[in-house]
Length: 247
Image 1 (cartoon, rainbow, N blue to C red):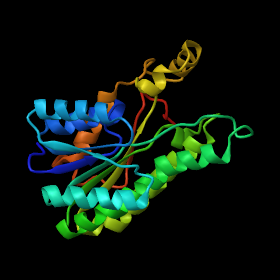
Image 2: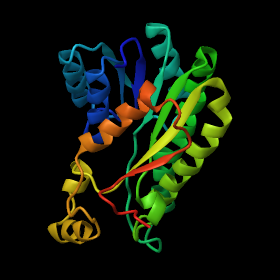
Image 3: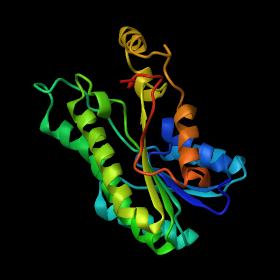
């Protein structure tokens, strides 16, 4: 159980982020639901969190903006007095072959997926260092491990998340803070539902378990890594991908 713990989940208004927020709430953690543009969906997630008997709040913030993240974290600590769990889930895609990819699309994905993790970890670590305890969980991707044609920006951002995870694990371990990453494969979310049937079929063919994952598959792992049962696990990249990254 995570009763008494306060968690911040970025990009928690839908998809994997929403599932993680609900999994943590199911363990009785207080959940701060970060969103950027989906206020109504964030409020719906908060209502579901409260229906599970947990406390929480929503905070709007573009996590690629350093000053905005600092303000968000200060607000969270002001309200709850502590911050025990950070889940970096926010992210976007802007897919294209590199010869057609614009600089703006490359920068946007790096900012939303990688710089956001730098911003939140830096801001949250100050509080966790004072507490001498904390759990940081970054959502990477199988694309950051294997690469994926048409996703130079996304794969680079998620490979960066993996490097950041391992480095932060080394920097923060002496203060009782663990830092791990989950690398999902294809998961049934709004993002993948927009794919054509032919692309979905080709993707499924690459998965040994022959199906897309569910958001809950990622959420269960996040809840485990946030718990005391994972207190001796840090610096790890855990693939939850139906076997795609078997090597």
